[in-house]
Length: 455
Image (cartoon, rainbow, N blue to C red):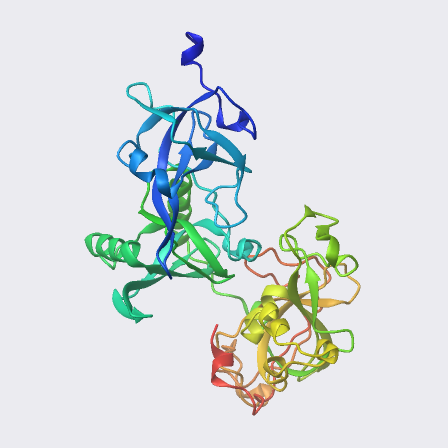
């Protein structure tokens, strides 16, 4: 590979205490890290990529920024030496590498030109929308089709004026994710979308975003946006999106519509509680050893996450049945996370008393798609499908001999379908064989609220 001084150490081999090494890296992203609330500067941070595509976050101490800010340019390739390596910081890291590089005053920075195409321009660690729960309050990268862009607004926040732009992106399974951008990235994104045309089909990458909830992310000082970026992940997404748009999902059959009928929520039994401490990654219960912060399936975790377990009784025109409603599905139903409700607990009895937000659901009417995972007659809710108006009172079957439209017809005979298969894979079209006990209600419950109709 040449003389010893020309040999470079891969980022994957860097660890605490390593010395006398040199790396060849590209600065993929470069930003000043600071607290926007008080403008306290933490340092000049960057995301480094080497020839193997491995990444590491690097930091220049605030006192040394003047020495390096003119030497470091985003996108360029450098040989770096005389730096230190230490464990990564706890929060707000832009990559999963367990080590962080720290520049010292004596760190040598030498730009490399020519023969640098082997080092990627970009590196992302994309997280699926459904897995965002495991990254709450951490930074992450997301990818999706832009389906909404709001107007650029200027708001006052603690005697400061800041620009905000709200947007929404959708994944290939139809999930929407709210994106809130602040400051320079909000202005840049709004301007770039105007150039693209608000009606154009655009696939966006948002990097270094902070996860606020399972349904929303917001920008940080390290965030950056890319529109229709030329990388394999975006190309694959665009191709799948084109196929979906060219082959829309077929209209559901009568049997499928019957299996997605309205039920009334009668009761929620909380004698064993309404939430549990679970693994942030796989949602497995950690109730037996919450203080060890270790999942039997995933290993060590930062901390258990409070998740819903609602033992509900529902009723339709054919009778009643018990359903379990867990985690994200329950959160969509309640409207707030279990963590938020747990924060309001003041007494031990509150763990076994329905919070007001859950109690208000009693009597409401919904469409549940359920499954029996083990075929033992124990049903759990797979998804909530509250996107149509509730049914009206049933009439006699002789009023119509044609196949009725479930959203308008009043002549359906209540039907019960039990699901003995495994759960319907998320994102796939539901089948008649893998269906729940369900039926058409004769009339909607009088406590049905307007927001229960929204998907």
